[in-house]
Image 1 (cartoon, rainbow, N blue to C red):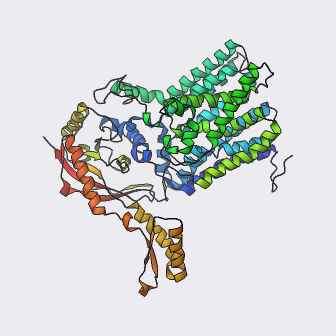
Image 2: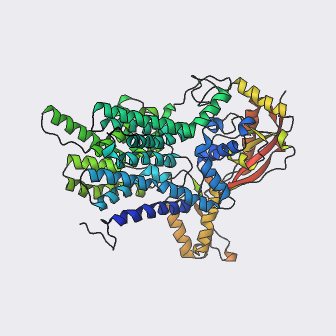
Image 3: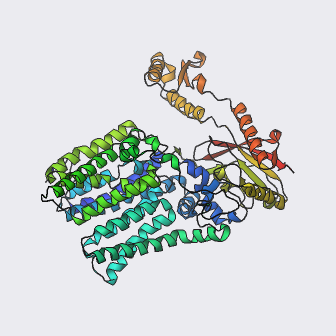
Length: 609
């Protein structure tokens, strides 16, 4: 029995049970430590979507959150309700805890797979499950509302249900059919909430064809699972698809408008081609390419080696398998559950690569890579050697990722209320129309709609919604028919870097670093050695401050000039839509998500005609 430091009995079954409770709590606390979620999509539609759903905003608004504002809001509704009905820090813990439940699923999968292969040592099962939860895209999504971790929970539990009932799946009984439907339903719930999970659902269907039974039994199992997927998809996505169909004649409006034309949307498909491999060689070496440059598959800079390691082992296993087949040597068959996991990971990757190649869509797949790596090592080498290598390889891969610096999608300090928007006094809200014209380089403003009266009509101008001339005609028609005042919400400069620098400066003051020659020297040395985006200036010695920490001259922002530029851009944008903005009427108002310190400009406008 392996001996680990401390008094933890790693091979005790109760240790796994305790871990199943403790790990989600740890992720809940980690979410709290990160702070309030402020990812770009939240600013755009994760707040607006559920607010619009609860207040029938589809009846009066027109694409204020771009085309994403027409995504199924059901995924965002629980997070929105948590954030608006609980203290933000409590809501953050609940969201992180929920993401941490993925550990229970991967622990169950790992335990089933390794037990099936004869590895009863619970410490090995627990060890691998822990590193499944230390994969990069899962970690970057903790406490995040983008939905990739949340929906991965359903996909992983779908696999766990299959693994836990694996030995009986070949039977044609009501119980087995119910298990297959339930597992499919879980995967389908994820698909209905976020369509990108269709990759995982389809991969599970295909992996079930590897079940060790007759061809008919395999086809039956995959088919029944697929029925469950359709039921689950209908449960979470059916209502919204029907709503989009009845309103716009397109269940996925405005996506796939080339197939389901609508006069408001330009003909288009959904694929974002910029993330896909660009040549046959890139398809072949894709895991190496996006590991060297993570911006090929996403916006975050992530340094990881887990994908190349798994890819090399998959290739090595395939080469060895076919070599043994060609030379007619005996091959060692994988245990059925292990074969399922490897097939799922391989098929899901091969589907994901040409369809999306957006790395955060692989959370459920990536979380099973450590298990897949162990299975492949055990198949290529002696099992004991596989354990010894994994004990070093997985921690080293994780350490490399963490030491290189693991970013996140945006978090800010907690503050109450979580969502706060300073507003102008508006009369006759039910007649008022507000045009949203934000600068693409700045964060979206549509989240602020949730803090205004739900009777105000908001219209998005030149955002991600690819509108037609009919779209602009409808925008003008809405403003005209309401008969009230027209306003424009425009971007405003917030100088966030200056605010963050002030926090650092306050900390330096609190530590007494600015009140002594040695402290000032330490600050200057740190700025120079680590090439920090900061500068150390001489202080006013009369008050005992010998130096002060501040922005570099090139990082200073002229807020007034920037705001005038944003107003001019907004004026041009609404002008092309048939409205006239009055630049002299613009006033800047404060807003914030947690301690984010946002701001926006509010201007009067009229119809040009």
